[in-house]
Length: 118
Image (tube, rainbow, N blue to C red; front, side, top):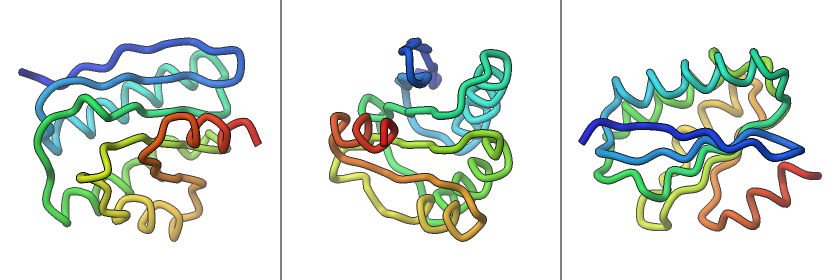
């Protein structure tokens, strides 16, 4: 099943809820889609809910995701993603932060929401 993202508007930020099987090309497409949506709506923060994405990616693919988030979403003040504990590597987070992006990866959606609201 191809990855898809459904957008949910909140007063403070935009949520992108992703589903489907993980692939690096589709992750890059979803990052570009999130960039278009947040630019069009003037959002300053974005929450990527990745808890329903199936499968895993290699280290180099996580590295590339961190780079793409920094490049494509640089207009945002904060980006949070939520992943299952078994899939949290920290790679995309570290890469993105080194490039100047305020990206944090969470295992709990409530913590992510709190951080975005700070």
